[in-house]
Length: 197
Length: 228
Image (cartoon, rainbow over all chains, first blue to last red):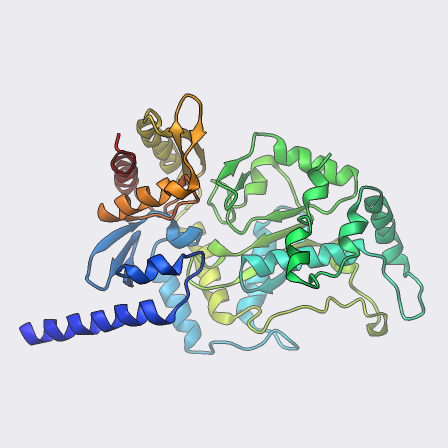
């Protein structure tokens, strides 16, 4: 028993060494992180998280605002395991699959009335980026290869002309990517003109 | 209804509704960022529902899979979708996407999470937890270094101040929020501050006794960190 716990302790210490050495953590001053013993989470149960030493912690921020039903929720564990038995991933480019179809239908049913279509992506940043890109594409003048604006877009071009009067054209006509870091730092947030005087 | 990363800033009632009216009047797209607020966090399934607002676009992520896997979605109106339809040669296609778009594991977790909402009546059982959180936070309210407590649904935020009367904030370099978090860790709770703001947002499945334990640890941690 003593040898086993000695070996386990050595393993954990190696893990802590590697934790300090290899990963760059988000929103973290790494100079501080490297000086401290990293908190390594091993498992979860309900609202609790357990570290590699078996110490228990209440998950006071839902693992950064994501967890809803607790860790190791049986129904969710089961659903993911059942899916793994079929396939982990296949693309939505040119193909589709049952979980995405069912989820899209469910989301439309639950969402505020009027939202009708679902565009999937990977996280909150990409979801907002999709929204901003869709909105800015529609708010820009649209041109066909014949340089004619189709009827459907005329309605939206009108929207752009209206928005242009309030300063949106300065924002939407810019490329979505800044040409340099200083450009990124100097440009105003896209949504600011909506609220500024 | 609340801005998360901005410092857990709750909105005054009617603000979202006014924004919707202005956007409709001036023909501006309203994008609702429900990434944080979606799936019961504010007490309703989506925060927009507090004020009966339908945005033109709505982003969800975070709680979409119950906190299991990275998956997100952007919902749009039929009108917006239709604006991208046309002959291929018109190049109106929305040329955008990601490799793991619609990943099956994420979708499976999401479907199971939504089923839990139905089977366990998660939303209707939130009311008593939200009320308990409000009541428990009142015990923290009188602390000399608590400037303001904000709450919506099961989201709470304690804003720490140097001076309660003048609302003078702590300098960010003092890292008071961080100090509170370290004290909370010693007492068995993980929280992550936003500057001088200490959020508390437990999973929706938290029990009443666990909620009381969390607010108790929060109070002790603030006392230990501020020295009062």
